[in-house]
Image (cartoon, rainbow, N blue to C red; front, side):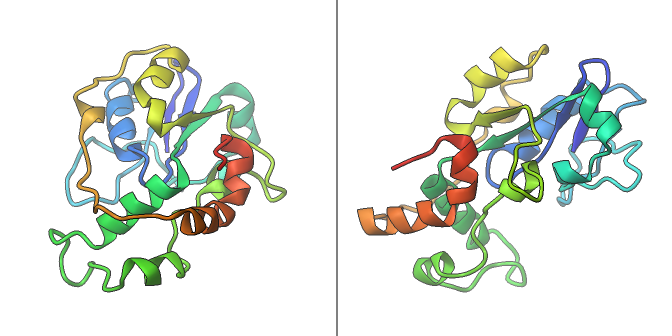
Length: 191
């Protein structure tokens, strides 16, 4: 989570959507009084401050209503199949330490509870949106430049992940979309 008081913005992180890169780019605009939470990564991208009980993965429903009333909350989401492939690629990446590397096949992964389903991060207990805007990963640069009152460093948010080349047939695509049905209600992704 990142809060920029001057701009009245709060960014809620989601998985495999360039969220760490966006948090890093937003942190360049943060003042000393803003909330900048520590990232749970080996690299240090920015100096955390004023985070209190907030974490990198603070969800919207845990933000006090006073902040929600005075800030615009936003997050990023990604097409479900692409998000799963990215997540699986990241979890099984050869560069990850063996103790953190996932040891399962794509089929095992798809049938597991590990899918990066994030709707709970930006909705309330009744699956009603708390965030004001969900930016689509596929349109990241365009939507960010339209939505944000500041320009983010494109070099920071342009890094590419190494994705595995995974074939997804129509039946599997439908299965994945069904798993993401709660988030799809808000993102508009559909088959």
